[in-house]
Length: 380
Image (tube, rainbow, N blue to C red; front, side, top):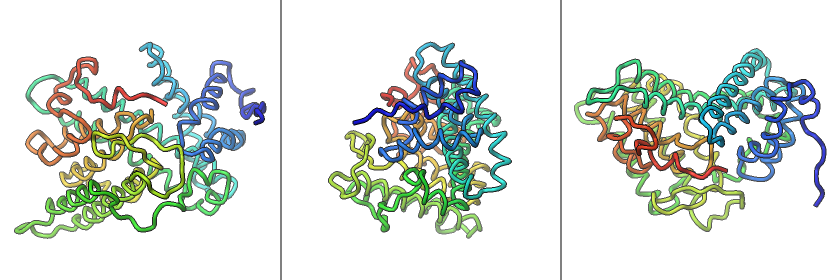
């Protein structure tokens, strides 16, 4: 096999200070390979994104942000971690300042770059929201009293940020679909091989689907009058069941879907299986109605419970650094908003992901055992 000696970042590199040039190397040879499952998509991130970035500097800043964030995860030194996180935030702010005006004109020559930047922004939000929730929980005063309203609001803002990050990528993809889906980024965006019919594919998946069905009783119950927001909850639940089913189809051993660089995924909370495409777990936040997001922001209990059940899906993923701890942190944030008297509503998600609500909402440092096993995952 031949070795590609071409410097993909040459044109961009010459315009950056040496301190940032090394980040492009880290992106090319490390970070880009963690952004996708399969080789064609990895190649797109590694080789085509630099080509796009040359003409779209918001994408250069987005790449520098995600590479810095990746390095912050890999560093052992706390000062270096903090330094790289601050650098990541600075680069992401620069990316967004250029990216937002560009969104006003999604056209053939800009669609792929905008989609790539939107995707990097979503991954950035995944990781930073998890870190923000951890830090907020750690800053809570100890004691039997629940967290104050401003803490709850901050926690839920972090949860919603992960959803809006994905929805932002969809906003770009929708008008530019015909260009992105037929271009060099198509391996990142197109999933023609996914099953069209979404049905639970194992006994465990069938059992979990029944559990999900029962959630409708939270808002449709004898003696409770119909309210207009019930429709949004029902639609969100149907989409959640569909997402669970899709994940089960792409996880069941011996399925006929394309062989990819699958990721470890806890299929039954004890056994580690392989999820053929982690993109499957991104379906729900993208597709839930806008009205559901408003309910979530308003701390509607039923919406919070559905979000906690969704958190099981990213919580089961293993060995993906930008998803590390995301499911657990979401459940802890939602538990804080629900209040101790309603924790029974999310007993199952907390148990599956391994969250001890009593421990996590009476903060200690991670080394003292307050957080869950997700924080000890191996990192690709």
